[in-house]
Length: 180
Image 1 (cartoon, helix red, strand yellow):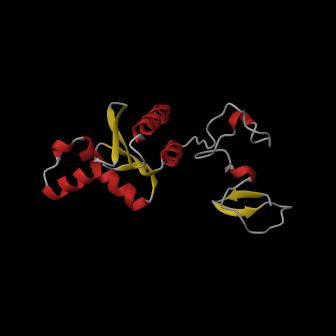
Image 2 (spheres, one colour; image 1 turned 45 degrees about the vertical axis):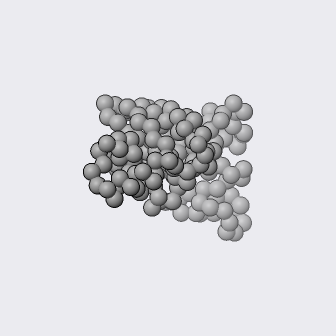
Image 3 (tube, helix red, strand yellow; image 1 turned 90 degrees about the vertical axis):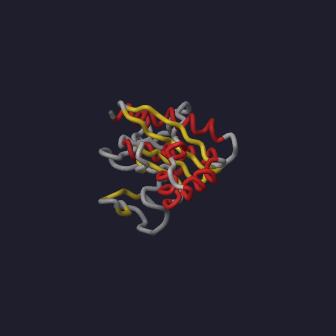
């Protein structure tokens, strides 16, 4: 069946069998594509749009021109590769910018991230005990972007999660700098 997106709904294209199946935007081979514009997935070199395979050297399977979507893709890939429960990018006040994982866990980690990065700022015993519990299973990396600071924070996985967070930090910086 051939599908196209129209107003964010699953719409069979003319000439398709009209049957249900797949998720919104799923194409053969597991690639999701959207029409060009804000949030659109780019066709690497135009080849995918013409039905040809993407270049063999292309490591990214999903791309977006929208910075928030691109950040989500970056964090989602990191979460999967590092077997993390959750990974978030937050501003210095703990507001969630992008995340991957269960939403309540993303919100919790986002709220605690500034305190995990600066445990001396904790003024409550209850918050301090939660920070202490999270510290063993969390990796936090501070990123300087356009005169401000954002925090990349991942929870779960193995003790080697630091290398995955470092790779994700480089990707997030690239995305944020391109958007600035």
